[in-house]
Image (cartoon, rainbow, N blue to C red; front, side):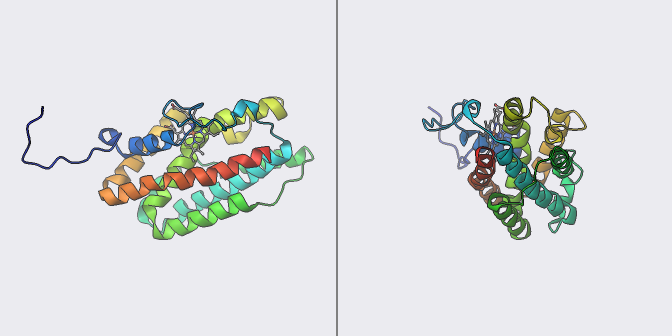
Length: 225
Ligand code: HEM
């Protein structure tokens, strides 16, 4: 048995030794369903992506609303009301222009591009509010939106493309540089910014993860709407 020490042992946070992004990842992975992540929770009612029946109309709604969200994120870091946001300009992960190109392609194919709807608009509003009054919570969304898109988002994109786009890969799923390099650069920057946060601010950031899943889940469901 360990002998009692003079110093009160500090609570450890999973992933803490590797940096704050690893803590964020740990919390996010636990919110996945077991069918996609070994850390995930069992959800008998979860509908696996393989069984989704996407439609072009639904997918267009998803792309339009996603663009609203990326426009907001990319606008916030440009304005940088909170100085540290400036670190996240030109990461190479930006998706707004890519989505604009994809939507233009759909339009040229004769599809009607829908107006943004509630999932994207309400997420955008939430992000704008957080960006001004709650930077740690804002960065939680920033991390989850960009990183989720490179993982599960890409997987979903591939499945949808096979089913309704003849396998065509959209710009939304292409990056100009090696993705692992881009992601690692952003991980380092988030870790650095978070080093300036108190433990309370870090916990507050981690607690926002669920909201990020709620909002993104509503966006994803547009695909099968
Ligand atoms: C990672 C699937 C939704 C956030 C992953 C991974 C998969 C996945 C397969 C990689 C697992 C690994 O590296 O071991 C999915 C599927 C989803 C979904 C199928 C929906 C049907 C979401 C949502 C969010 C999210 C809604 C948050 C808004 C993340 C994050 C990572 C991740 C932050 C870690 C990425 C990294 O470390 O690079 N997801 N995911 N995912 N996902 Fe999801």
